[in-house]
Length: 213
Ligand code: DX5
Ligand code: ZN
Image (cartoon, rainbow, N blue to C red; front, side, top):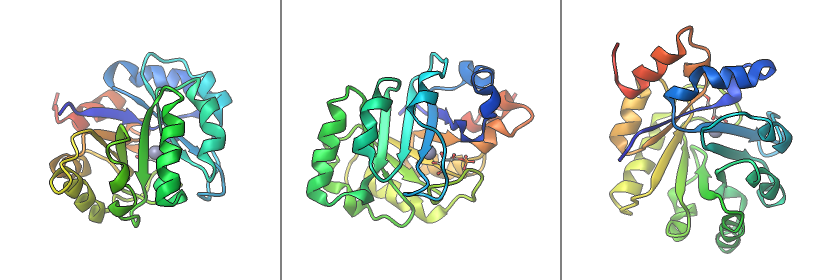
């Protein structure tokens, strides 16, 4: 399965967002946008009006860490290609409906699980979604330490549930932790601080891909 690198703009310079994006654009596969509402998580970030002004040829992958994804997904969907939201917000019945509703917006739909959320939350909708986002830190902030216990969820998805679609791993990804995440079976890797806070961003991306220059 093809490996994809998705830099999270959370660690970019928001005052120079488009030039920061340009600095890595040719070397990566997706652009990960972390949306936080100060309610579902403590932190507060950006809304659709910022996503609208992002200039990039990369597919935009919006990760909603908000309490009411159904209310805002439509506006984000105008400016992005993928939307994930947190499965823990919904009961099992409601979750199926929520996935269907976001699918209608013509974007790829993903379900996100925080480190303590069990796979059980999403098993019944695996056929309906396009990807799973496994959080390897607690949603809310960049720069946290990778939590290894989440790797078993990736392994179970691949082996026990034969999940063949994309598994995105988000949080604490660096040149060391990405190896564990790949081994477990993830194929999209979100990296914020490791890329944007690195003096040599291109070299950092090469290291994530396992290429030494
Ligand atoms: C955390 C976000 C992540 C975060 C990753 O809530 O979902 O995307 O920005 O940042 P790093 O790579 O610094 O852990
Ligand atoms: Zn994220």
